[in-house]
Image (cartoon, rainbow, N blue to C red):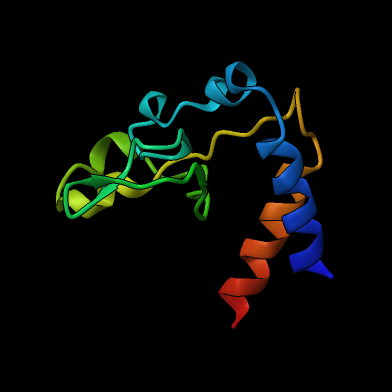
Length: 104
């Protein structure tokens, strides 16, 4: 059920027009979270023919993200970008999915 809800909400996001999806442009996130349009990622030097949205576990509010520059992988910690104004169901569905995956 959780997976199905997350998938349905994700499909709603990807059905949005390009401009709406770009409000979550991953380049706005120091943690590389957000939307990537088709062709932005590449594998072995060839553009990937997919679009994606990157989410992760939100860090605790008490974590000072400015101190997490080294080691470099610590830069991947940071807040998610959410399309609350366009697809309000996405945030709770993805957060529940992440929580359940963490429990595995």
